[in-house]
Image (cartoon, one colour):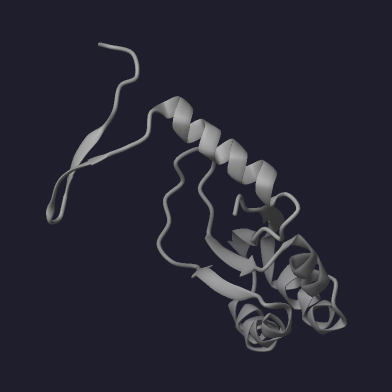
Amino acid sequence: MASGWRFKLPTSGKKHQKFAKPHQQTAKIAKCLTENKENHMTAYVVFIRDEMKDQAAYDRYLQLGVPTLAPFGGEILVANGAHEAFEGADFDGSVVLRFPDMASARAWYTSPEYEAVKSMRLEATLGRAVLLEGVA
C-alpha cells in the first residue's frame, strides 16, 4: 500500500468523502488542543453507578438535584440509558453531564445547592464521579 493512504466512504448525494491522512488529522487535533487551551473548553461530569442501594432515595435526589444544573450551564447528555461495557466490569447505570468549562463543573459540584443533595446520591448508590475536559 502506498504511503499517505486515505479512506473513502460513500455519502448521501456525493460520490465519496475523502478523509485526511492520519498524520494530518493528528496535527488538526493537536492544533485544536493548543489553540483552545486559552479558551474555555467544554467539561463533562460522568457518574458511573455500580450499585443501586435505594431507588426511592435516588429518585428524590434526581428531583432535587437536576434543577441545580442550570445556573452553572449544566445539562444532561446521558441518563441511565442502555449501556455496554467494552472493557472492565459491567456497571448498573451512568449519567453524563456537560458544562461550559471545568470551572463551571467544579462550581456546580461544590455549590451549596448541590452539596445539599449530593449526600442523597452517595447514600442511595455506590459508584464514582469523574470530571473530564473536552477537546473543544
